[in-house]
Image (cartoon, rainbow, N blue to C red; front, side):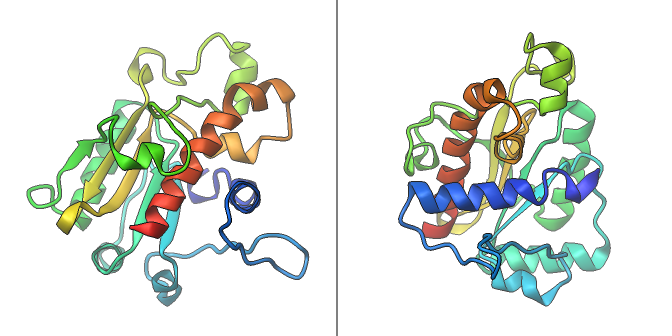
Length: 212
């Protein structure tokens, strides 16, 4: 699926909930739908976006021009959140590619400690929730939330920080937080099991990104 995973309804629903649960103004289109944009790393419009999100990045491969522009964006104040990639191979692929953008000797990937401010920006969140996509949840009948079995048993929240500790890149691995937004209206049981935690996490990260 690549970049279009969870798009556009994850974007739309998160913006709707953000407007309902916070005082953050959300711009609306003429169809009374929150504005949302697709941008490439090489698009000039990237620099108009203080926050960008990429989903299903476990097979990503950046072009040289994308590496340079993404580095420039992040070091000039941008914030990237990547979500919905599962297992060791997907992690290794992402780790390899983001290292081209932000060399790990200077910008190491670290696990977010539970006392970090991002976990309590608005809602008190104790850890990143493990949220499966709705198709897997239906197939497994809710018996497990790990889409890759023992290879994705635990969800992780990791970050890369810059000077003064500002988060440049947030990574939610072994979880599909955005599916709890995208699929909120498809099944009441799925909503009640996953969407409250997913929105709490999403709004916390978004508000943190916009205020730091």
